[in-house]
Amino acid sequence: MRIDKMLANLGYGSRKEVKKLLKEGIVKVNDSIVKDGKQHVDPNKDVVTLLGDVIEYKEFIYLMMNKPPGFISATEDAVEDTVIDLLQPEELVFQPFPVGRLDKDTEGLLLLTNDGQLAHKLLAPKKNVPKTYYAIIDGEVNSTDVNAFNKGVVLDDGYKTKPGKLTIIKSGVRSEIELTITEGKFHQVKRMFQAVGKRVIYLKRLSMCSLKLDDTLLLGEYRELTDQEVKMLNQQV
Ligand code: URA
Image (tube, rainbow, N blue to C red; front, side, top):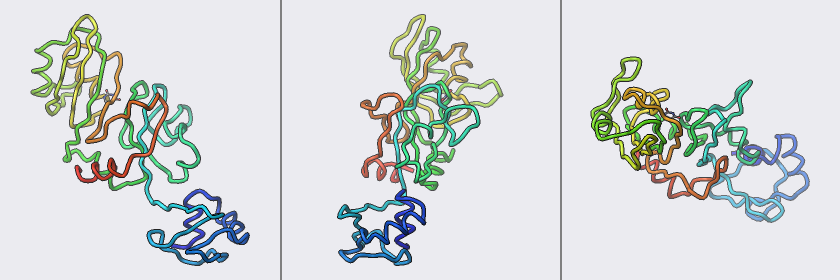
């Protein structure tokens, strides 16, 4: 790819600003100063430096966010705050988007990437990607619910869900549960509990496929996935 495109893609400025950078003679490719933006580089082979610092090129970005409540899972919105508003310019240059949706009031694991192929595979219904949620329920969750979820429950629109694995952590007037489902219908977890006459009062996603929410991330924080995490995701879908 052209060196000016590579630098612009990485957020070093507009094409015009990158042209100026190059003119300054501070960019080197394999130890030779490059001033011409048209020069081609192979980001996988050539060593590109700016003022001596090696520039790592990557096409894709993969971010794990601990989504806070109050933000919608969209790239832009005229009224609401979006999860993209939480990112820094360094990540925004890659134009990441959320993989699937969490409700505005839902917290927890949200993957953001610009890798459309991986996103598509993770969301494809036939891939049955498991997603695990922790929830606090208004109502006493019992073994009848576990069995009902195991068979699939009928939602308010008549749709019968695929089996869900419900684990009771604490049963009481307010219950705590974990639920693993392999589909992602609109408000699915909330509607599954509604189907058994109970109400979700707190919802947090803990995992998606092999990806587990990093518990060092505070609400609204995010980090890049490790190479190993990206590899595992790709292997599993
Ligand atoms: N199910 C829901 O009801 N809400 C979410 O945000 C995710 C799953």
